[in-house]
Amino acid sequence: MTHSCTAAMLTGVPGESGPGLLSYLGNTGFGQVEPGNLVMMVIGLAMIYLAVKKDYEPLLLVPIGFGIIAGNVPYNPQLMPIGYQDVLNGQPSVFNLFYSGVRSGLFPPLIFLGIGAMTDFSALLSNPKLLLLGAAAQIGIFLTLIGSLLLGFDLRQAAAIGIIGGADGPTAIFVASQMSPALLGAIAIAAYSYMGLVPVIQPPIMRLLTTREERRIRMQPVRAVSRTEKVLFPVLAFLVTAFIAPGAITLLGMLFFGNLLKESGVTERLAKSARESLNNIVVILLGFSVGTSTQAEYFLTLDSLKIFALGAASFAVATAGGILFAKFMNIFLDDGRKINPLVGAAGVSAVPDAARVVEMEGRKYDRNNHLLMHAMAPNVAGVIGSAIAAGVLLSVVPH
Image (tube, rainbow, N blue to C red; front, side, top):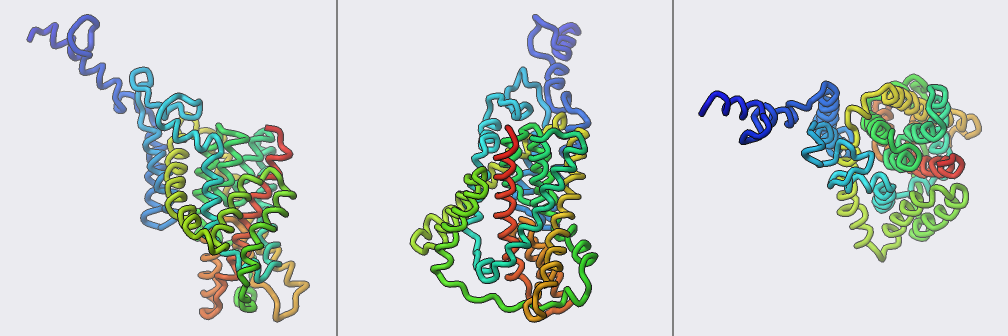
């Protein structure tokens, strides 16, 4: 082989045989990679680590984390139209087809269907006043909205960011897909990251705002709830909440429909499909699609840092809101009917992790004081409350 032919193969001179080794290398990930891609891959690996090692929301953090890694492998879009680098702008590709379920708002309602099919509202029906704790925790949404406006976001962006305060990932994704698609990746990552960090974020706030005596309060046992109550609840609750917040009909309709499938006793096959196979498929596609939308050029921005700061503050405020409102309610309750303020922390929508944290924290001060079932009441109320808040924002904010 002559010297000129060898040089042509290395450099890819036009007219010579072969594309050239250097030209090929320039079109691989090694030749296209930028520092931001590597940073995002580290973030993806960190999320997988938290899921595998710490068991923080593994069903979501593993798909999202791997999606982040996949979405930040660089390539030359002119030569390889894979499409994940421009998934937010609708470039035709398989990744974009997956992401259409996020962009259209399809996946979050299907998640709510599965949540409804696996949720037992007995604790809430047994002690309806605990619904107020779930409502009180939603203060995080509206304070985050105000904080977003003060940090320079417009009203639609602020509304989408505010839902992080409810600690409800599917609702945050649903609102962001309608209000601010460009921020969806950062909002979704923030929402699910803080949901996964419930066991880390909430306990210090719970201890700061309660006394040792309050943490030892024993609540009255949960009463038995009849089947009639369980069947009527999803129908009546849907009608009431839908009339209050018509914008939430999609989310609340699927939530209560899934619960009716579960509680009716005659559609167990459908309920099982909703909470198992269908839910699992949607979680996989939702998590991976959200991950692939977080390319470095969109994600590593000042706005993303603001969103993460607002998310942390909103989660803390929501936790504090539930606890402080429980303490306020105790002013008007007799000694035998007082609420353990720790239960208020479960008013955020992180089901069932927030309720488990309440149980573990309460047992540190009284090993025989089981708060889990009591905490499930504001926990599921928080899911309903965040969906209502989303519906209100969708109804009043132009988009």
